[in-house]
Amino acid sequence: MQWEQLLSLKRQGDTSKRLRKEQDDTRLGFEVDYDRIIFSAAFRSLQDKTQVIPLSKTDFVHTRLTHSLEVSVVGRSLGRLVGKQILEKRPYLAEIHGFQMNDFGAIVAAASLAHDIGNPPFGHSGEKAIGEYFTNGNGQQYKGQVSDKEWQDLIDFEGNANGFSVLSTSREGIEGALRISYATLGTFTKYPKESLPKKPTKNICDKKYGFFQQDKEFFTEVAKELGLIPNKSGNDIGFERHPLAYLVEAADDICYTIIDFEDGINLGLIQEEFALEYLIKLVKNGIDSKKYNELTTKEDRISYLRALAIGSLIQDAVKIFIANEEAILSGEFPYAIMDKSQYKAQMDDIIKISVKKVYQSKEVIEKEVIGYKVINVLLDVFCTAYINKSNDNASNYDNLVLKLLPERYQQDKQTLYDRLLNICHFVSMLTDGKALQLFNIIQSNKS
Image 1 (cartoon, rainbow, N blue to C red):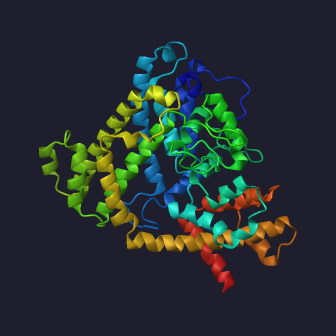
Image 2: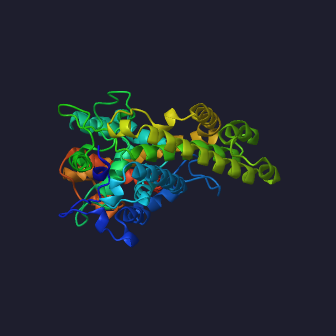
Image 3: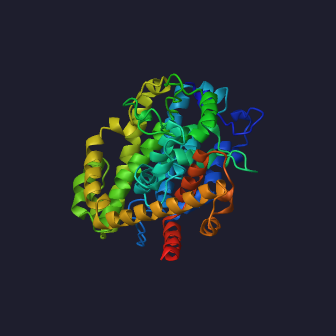
């Protein structure tokens, strides 16, 4: 893969080439990506979507929105630091093409900002709940009526693939959705493959999938424009990652490891002593003991250690990326960046504590149970009504239910797969609170 191709400014629908050296630096294309994501309704909805604690009303617990903003900040730093060294190593990128250090930062920041934009309500259990509606719920009736790969999209519903749809799927009058640059779309896609075959290798890019069948053709266009390396044969579509996708993943890994741990401490689910025991291993070379001992509140002490820990992990991630740049460009680096970190053991220890004390806490489990019930009911009611309407078999109740759908989701689709995915997309874009509100309305009508 070649950096000058990987940093493509092309957008969906472009008829002429966008050259970096002709860009207006006051309104750079990669920064426009960030702005379009920030102002999108899908991004705003993240303010009421679960990060760790579902439906939490405490003011210091992260939502998907605050988490995404923090990941974008870390991603920007990673991109700039990596970009600086790449340009020093490959000066022609600046001299001939006009690329700058901040371009790398802007691409990674935008992709990081959007990394959770396709996630359903109620956290990762929301993804599982959608899939299980089709494997164990009333959605089983549709099996055999769609292709194997279409069925896999449904039973293994994936927030990453849904996010690619949010950023790129056209609808009437809106070509290319947010019309994000191909460089940012490629960087956003951590798993550049379709849903089948599932986990064909241990390569990190095969861990999940990154686009639905409905988006396969467009993603293939993006991949070819960027020069991504194909790694599947026959009728299966898949590619090696865009190099900067490794940095998006690293930014997310760094933030959820450290910040979810911090949330657990602030909530009282993890004792402060654990912060000293585990975080100190990440910051021992940078901590100012005098400054730390002058901090009088738990929140300030944890905040100080968190900032130092993130800084240590950023520097380590950059070092790993640069050391392996040639392998990454050749599609021969099958690992997550942080899996090769000198701090991997410490990160694993922190995650184990978070899983035990936070992710499996009574409050989280109770709300996830609620989320499963809510999503199952919403999918069942809306899929039934929507399919009945498409088959000219809608009841009065079906017609009433469909009036609860936003206008963009009421338009009929040509195939059963597209209809089912349309409802899945609608449910996935709901906030935790809105999903619960719709559930209560539907349940009250049933009683």
